[in-house]
Image (cartoon, rainbow, N blue to C red; front, side, top):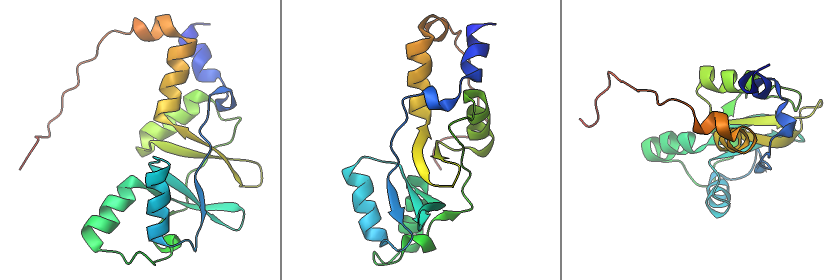
Length: 154
């Protein structure tokens, strides 16, 4: 089995996972933003009781704050992305990467069997894991050319 195949079959519980920044759905929007800034986080996991109810990300901030002018007292539950996609510690790295790629996510909440948040899988944690555990394969990857039909600017 190649190192690449082996890496993709590893359960994500083996990665150095970030502890999630967790807030209750009634937490005011302004307080959530302050916590995100203080902890340098790009997302928060929003809970209803002890289970994950949604996610609020820096992308949501850009859309909500910059385009809609939200009252800082608004409950984050009204602004979060509902029906969040989550994974478990048993999810393989390959499954997680495919999910993140297909859904264009940069963060995936990891939950236990009862839906309680227990970690956060980030693109950065995946890159660190691969670089630390498969350095020769990562360093020797051929460059890929990225071409886009989109143009920068107006």
